[in-house]
Length: 445
View 1 (cartoon, helix red, strand yellow):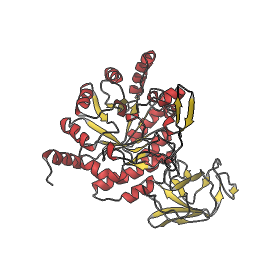
View 2 (cartoon, helix red, strand yellow):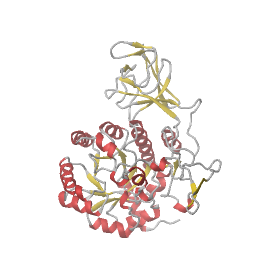
View 3 (cartoon, helix red, strand yellow):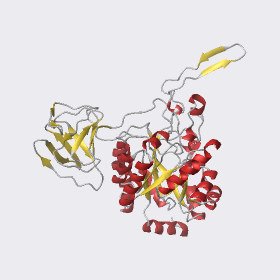
View 4 (cartoon, rainbow, N blue to C red):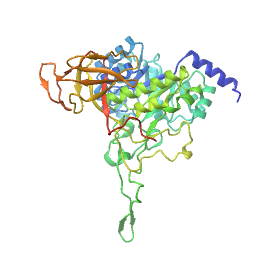
């Protein structure tokens, strides 16, 4: 089928500029890990004006400034989240917060409402402004309005289609478009949810969602005239997690997404998730993006990594397929399942020691998870061996000697003694074992 001039033009642009990989940074450690594992940029924030209060509290202004300086020193970017929905009583505090964040010199602000967009543009006129997915942009009309107000990038609604993204890019070619490719999906439309507010007083659009949609529920029928109340029995196999969405996973669709020429940034959700999650998601999508430009296609490699994470089941959601065509977006019988692997430990930042996260014994075969460009060398000495097998690197301890010289027969989660490695490994290296016997692949969708 012959390409039209627009598609040809967009593909030429793709050849000149690679799509950005944007990863979550819940704290300074996760920021560094995401960048080391391949992210081009990270997003995070300070205080309750960020939509993730828990992760926002993990950053102080000082540590967030350190993260920005670290990113810039490595040629990477940091986008500051100021995407909460403020109350009238907080507007004065919000203005001060925007002023303080601007002084840290991040590469953009992420904001969610027209008012905050306007205020940020007034206070920091030179700061690029990215419009949050919570603004629910689905069409050219809304995108153009926000662009006129000063938005330089739109983080589109998660329900948008690739076709509509192409239409927006065609009409507004200078406006950057960002899409989610991985992470938790919200039960409500683009995250505009009030369930947690109603049940616990924790406001999702202020960053304190209690994830009430992940709970199991029982359904009852009531007759107000007679006061009769009876439980509706669950059909076997249907489940009671009636609002629990599966996790988004578009790693096997990167070729289609980038072929569209409409997307400038691929975003991973998950500021409150683990450091291992930050590493593995960045690594998997870095591989997928690089493979695209090198004209490779290896979805099994990306999925091997992504299925090692805890998840609610995976779905490719709505970007590729239309919503009414999808019937696999909910996990009705569980809220979370183990991934294919269990993390046993990680290195200290200097790469010299092993910090235990799960029971480890001498002789255990631990798979090494390191950044894509990491150099690992085989070694065999008194502490253990590091070796390559079937294209992957492994560690096997001969003895567990702590930094203080004590020898351990085994180490367990909670043991804070750094254990000597056979040789130095790349900073932020992780170690894992199969979570299930004889597991060497990822489960089918």
